[in-house]
Image 1: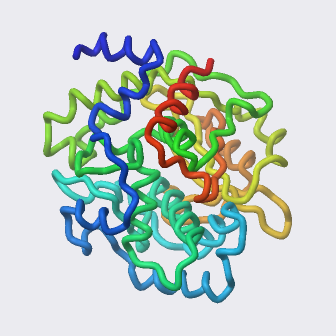
Image 2: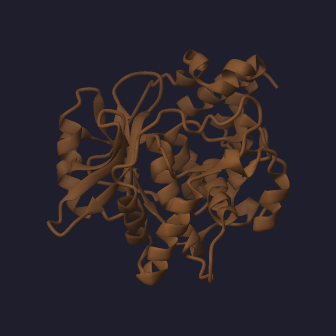
Length: 331
């Protein structure tokens, strides 16, 4: 199928093509199924098991499972403050893609994603949790249709697309288009992965992945991405909640977002930005989200997603695809 035909599919609402291009039509629900698919050793795909156990012991003792999911996200995030920032922690192999966890070092994506994953995982009441439980939650949010067979192109590489995908699957509600002051980002060129391919192990070692990655970028360019401009963020801060996922919109071409983190409100009520910071080289609880934005001229504003309880997860493929079509046709 030509790129022109693929773009036509998207324009006509055939966004299901985006998720079906690389994905088999099957439903994966059992944790042991994840283990059967896994092709990389556990020592590669799960790092920080001792920290995993210690945090979950605290969560059990303090009954975090009884808290709303946004509160759980923040509790897990605060346990990680001060741990080191390391770039490209998702690039774990030269060829095989796999759900992965690293609780020893983080980039901005793995920080928010693993906090969300642990919060969702503990939404299922169990006597104890295993690495496979968290890996399954990572798979659900990191990959199109919540499924990874080992293909690098199955991963959601652009945060803007992540909001659409996870809204469609009932894991995180994309609030941005309905917030006061929201504006659509138009005429954005999405080229980061193929322009900077030397920075990504998989693209560097598998040149055949670069043309289809460019096709994915072309489809992401056409998504109806809304953001809250920086000057209007202070006005919506009172409506932000603990655990909200905050994508930082950039004013530059390459992608829609350049950074991501979480909202954390303390006793002072300030909606602070909690994130894995490249500048601080660690996970930090920063100033208010509006104050954080004002420090960077490249930051244009924010996208907002709200984590949903595991009971709201969409498991029916047809419903997910219908949701995705509806979301991507909004203008």
